[in-house]
Image (cartoon, rainbow, N blue to C red; front, side, top):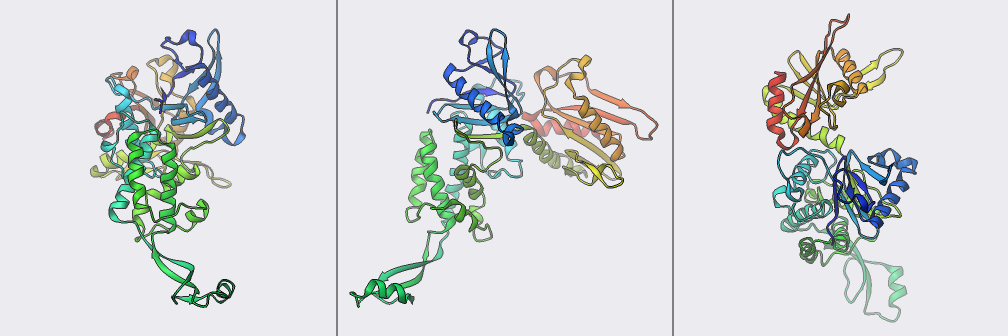
Length: 435
């Protein structure tokens, strides 16, 4: 399969060949650009998806023509004609990143922190990150889990079988027996239980493997799928995905299927994090970076701050902006940490700040109102905004804002830049500054 067209967040895509070598833009073949343009317009015109597909904006630039700007979502879109667009997050690495290998590694580790992501246990080091696009990497992760299942052994179950036999076994089905055996007195139409591999979990996994065999463009994944299908030779593909999924319960006996079944939903039924399908695409798998970043920072903070006695809570609940006549306008800061009587509120913002104090570095006024409300309602002056580090803000002096008013609580908002690629070390620095 042809290598996908690769862009990063905040890049602007054009289809005007005159600007092919302009550093401001990412040039895409004119026909492919028209297909992508159609995809964006199709979904932004749909009320159900407009807010979700806010990540791609179609605009117009003088002399350049139509432009498509990307923000906040990353992943992969594949058009109906097979053309792929891979969107990677903008992560500061401080060094060259050949084939975006390091970016993909960091992003995959970030995904593992997400609550609903079904690949928490996968081994990043075994993935061919430099040779595969994101969708092929997800296929490879699925195949890792299938390999584990096959190694542990596929589960069998007693299945009720009805068949015409030359011997008596199980329960005679009288109506079917009379209908089938008037001329064959030596036969018996029987119902009996057999211990077979043909159970819903195995049918779903086999169906997923067969679909991925058609979709994959990777020789390595293709080979892995062929090998895996040998173990499912005695299993029939699912005839009804909804029915088979409804029969599956993950418990102590079926724990080996725990990661596979959510992945199968992603691949078979387009049920995932932010998956879109339409007339112009065969599939698209997209992740909201705001949520991914928040989840990753919260997970890592528990690891770094926990041993020092801090209790780390993500998406803290229970506070409201107004209490009367009834509680209204719930407050939900991304992270709240407590140590004894001390409370610190932290909010993650997946946004690229700029080194210009005249425009408050690009910090939103609405965000600062939000921080002020957190300070008053949590009765704390310790408020932190956590932005991802970027090249322009590296080595800049600390940014902080202090509000004094009639309240006894002075609101002190500090800005901290998280080095996502070296997050453990970065959060150790944050801990020292807070401590």
